[in-house]
Image (tube, rainbow over all chains, first blue to last red; front, side):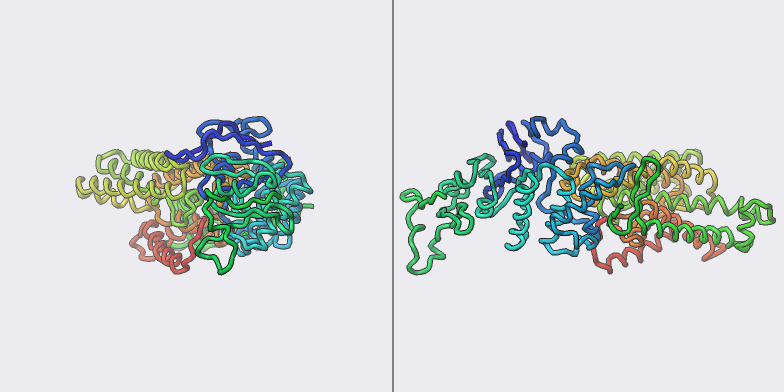
Length: 283
Length: 345
């Protein structure tokens, strides 16, 4: 449903994305991965019309997104930026209610639909019990669920999230990703997220986009494209890819470096990548 | 049916549906009562003293021996004080919300200095008294335009707006001093006096002018009250829910500086009202941003009391209201510092 054509984005004198053509499948969970500063957040922000491209277009169901009124886009596309600023003292219900902004006008500030959407969003993100708490008093995991609830209240077909798990501990990361997975499966939402953890990406993504230096290196289902060669291409990291014992998805295990190699360990990392690339186990 | 976030009620007015928060309404009601009391006090105290009961009778228009003192001498000034405070309160709220800075006010973003420079030039240049206020208005607006244009390059980001304002303010103040030093000492003193905001010798004409200003602002403020709701969100989040943060900031900032320039042109710099009123109001309603209407009421209350204190504290010597509010501002800033929490509006 979202795609880019010849998308070129830059800051000041630096070009971050140069002529990118990306297609995001509808009703799928797409994860964008890549090393720091590879342009993955820039791509997400450009697709969410938070950044104006220098050249090229972002298409939302075939229409250039910049030709659509921003309120109309906000009814079809929810965005969760990387580290949104929490307004001081604002309550959970209040913040989730902001998600109804694209349906409101100053003379029509609240409706039964708003009410229902906010309730449903809070229940779905499991924050309904926190409704009257101040957002700035919540833990990181709770806060992230509140932000997700706000974007859910927008009732959009698609949800774009920029590193939604970055500041969370492992249990909360899983909680957030499970929530996104449920949205995809139970509500047929299109989910697009930038993630840092390759293994989480492999487990949750239907469609994986691997980026390096502003270009897409590979795109497709993780089980087809996530190989040791790809990880080396994209991250410059030697690794072994094995099937995950829990999910069967590809599991990326970095090779040992000499500095952390205990006695008697297998010597995968000792051979140089050029002479003997690490073994890749297809899932 | 409706379960809004706690502390709110949905009000249906014909086709319109407005969310009304309880605390601001409650605080507003209390402030209106306090303001009424302050007004009566302002009309009552002085030489001669007029008992509050007589003030009320005189106001009701039955005709009393005090009509000259209450209605003709004191009422215009008290009404003007309330109007000045209200406009400053509104201007401060808008400017602080755009800059996300509780210390921002018209004199931080250069408007006061622009008006001051223009008024000084007019006064020392021997312009007619009637031309001082229009000159000051033009000066304040010119400064506002420069600050807005400088601030706009990066979408009127908060820090950029403040930095542009401080730079313009400092430059204009320096120019003002040059003009004063070069002028005839008597004119220089007159200019100095103008710069300290005072209500002495002013009345219905200025009050009417500010009343019209406030009325013209009403539709803008209705929009602003709603637009301010998104002002506490960062730009990406705001865009994500379909807002246009830059357009909003420009609209809110323009309204704020316009209001500040209008009121400064009439009465000079009544320091700190625009700074303090929004923050006091915000604490009263415990909101994440200053409420417009309450800030206007707090501003009105502050200036009515400051003018009254200036008239009575060292009577018969009269202090300009601007001196009193400035004296209040210092301790308030120290209080903010001691509290130590950086407040974002």
